[in-house]
Length: 458
Image (cartoon, rainbow, N blue to C red; front, side, top):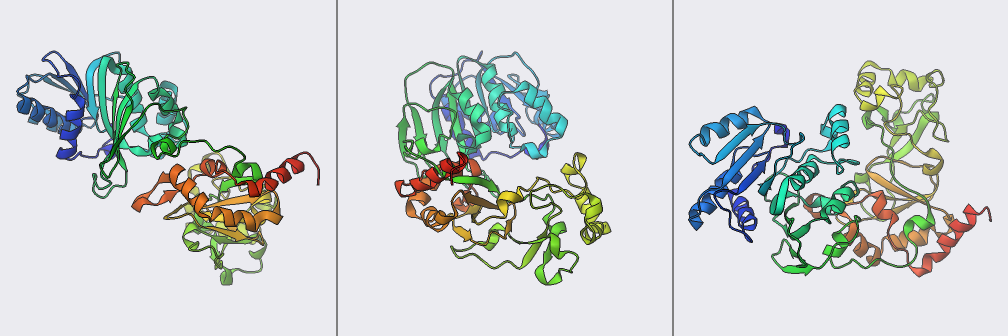
C-alpha cells in the first residue's frame, strides 16, 4: 500500500496482538500466517519472538507490501528465514488464497487521499467501500475473505469503524463472523497521531461466547450480541436502549453542517473592509472556534456569497464587483485549485448553500468540542461555516426552549454516548447523530407543529 499509510507498530503492542492471535490455537509448521501491508516486518519479528518463547517451530509467514523500499528492507533482513515469503504486491487486488491466521496494522488512508479512479475501483470491488471510507476497512474485508474455517484475525485500527455512518456496511459484514474481543488501547500508542486505536480479534469459528470488551482503563466486560449496522458505541457504553418517542429531526426543518466553500479565505472579508458594491453579497459569518459559550458571539467577518436567497448560483454577468473581487489573480488561482471546479463554475462554493433554510432563526454548535454548546441566532442573519452545525426548528416559538434542552445534562449525556471522538477526548458532532437525539415529552408540541406545517395547517 502507499507509504502515506504506513504507521510502525510498537513492539509491546505487536507482542500483545500475537498473544491474541495464538490464544486459542497453537500454530503448526504448516500453518499459514498473513501480514498484509507488512511494512518493515514488526509482526514477523513478533511472531518469531513468540515462537522462540514458546519453543514452537516457526510457521509459514507471507508478508504482502506495495512499497518497494519496505520490500527491499524486508528481503535484506529476513533473507535467511526459510518460512517467510515477502511479496511486492497490492493486497487489495483480487486473491483466492486462504490463511489460518492474519495479523496486521493496515494503512489508515482516507478516501480524500485517493485518486477518483482508485475510489471507483474500490467501490466496484468492496462492499465496505461506501461513503467516506478508509482503506483499513477494505483490508479488513479482504482479510475476512481470505481466512480459513476456524481461522483467526487480529488487527489494530482506529476505533471509529464502531460508530461512523460510512462504516455501517463493515459492521454489517462483521456480524457474519465471531468478534471475540475489542481491546481499546492507549490513545498515545502511535505518538503524534490521534487514532483512538482498537485491537479487534475476529474468528470464523461459530460460537455462542460473548464478545469481550477491554476498555482503556483495563476493565473487562462482555456483550452477548451486537445489533444492526447502526453505531455500536451506545451498546459499548451501556447506553444501548433505543429511546422511545420523537427525535430532534422530527421537530426541525433542517439539521446540517454549515457552508462549505472549499476555500473560505477567498470569500472572507472583515466587515469594515466591505465596499458598497460588495455589501449586497455579504453575510455575517462564524466559524466553530468562535463559539465558546451559550451566548452568541459577535461576528467580525463577512462571507461573500455568489448565490441568491434561494441558493441559486448567480450568473457571472450578475456578480458585478464580487466578480472583480474573486477574479483577482491570487484569489482566482486559489479557487481554481478546488476539486469542485471540475464540475462547477470557478466561483461556485464546494457545496450549494441552502440559504432558504440558513437565513432563518436557528441554533448553532461547533462541530468539535469538549462539551457541545448550542447558541441561538435569533435574527437568522448568520451564515455558519463548515465547522458549525445549524439546527432550524419548524416552530420559531420554541427555539429558546429547544436550545435550553440541547444544553442540558440529559442531551450532553446522550451525545457523549453516541458521538465520535476527536483529539483530546473531544466529541465530533455529525448531522446524522444530532438528528437521532431524543426529545423530552415537554417538546412534543414542536413535533406536532411540524406535522401540522407539513399538512398545510397553520
